[in-house]
Length: 349
Image (cartoon, rainbow, N blue to C red; front, side, top):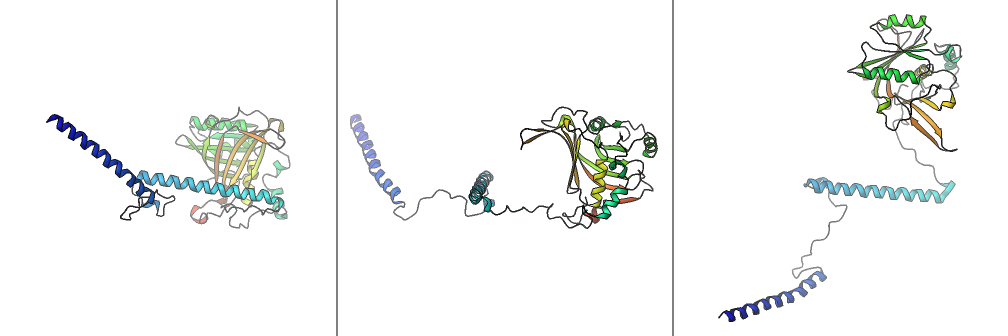
């Protein structure tokens, strides 16, 4: 009996194998035809980009994957169009159309009546008779006093010391609890031409007062984004004692001219080009960015720059006639956010 079962089991296994072998060509035939006997099409691979919104995908991981693929495809298409346009411009040569100017907040600026015309006789007369005329006529040389608010912390003190290495002939003195109304007469008696006061809040510099002596004006700035030398990546060596060059950018209005002339009067007239050091005050959308660099000529067309520090950003809060007087002073200009900041394309400097 056992032998009969073994034979019958062996014959059944062989029958199953033959049946499976006979079904294989049928499945292959279905795959080749692309449809089953009932006419149902097999599922196709998902097309990309999908015909529906990616935000409709409920699975978070799948949605993120599809969005990443979509961004990559957009980037490839943009790069291909850019390469195609570049080849067309190279083929046309000098006949190529000019590049389109992108729209920015800066070039869409609202027209300001106070924008200075270089050939305006009234502006030339005002500059020849203002408080900075003696400096620009080379009758006086700058001498700067740098001080802080009461009880300064280490970060503010280090900023003052680093500013003294940027501005030639500047001296750092501690406040010692004296009021500015008492400090200003002492500065005038000691032939200082400018007074710089750096204020702080929560151990961080947050304000700067610049007063031109002896007759003003006085400007109050908000200070932000302060970076000392050790906090700047890939900075160069400490600056030398050479007198730096100065660059003033985008001070176009009457108010901007006054502020730019204040910054210019901090530095001596004759820069020492051998030091290759540049102090930059760049105005963009009424924010004044200060940077201090050293440059080197790598070739006739290429120039390398290296930031020396410190760096910070200023925003003008008020401009006052005369020296500092918070109680009875007469203000030429005061920033009023609710009245002046109604349009993003309106600038004052």
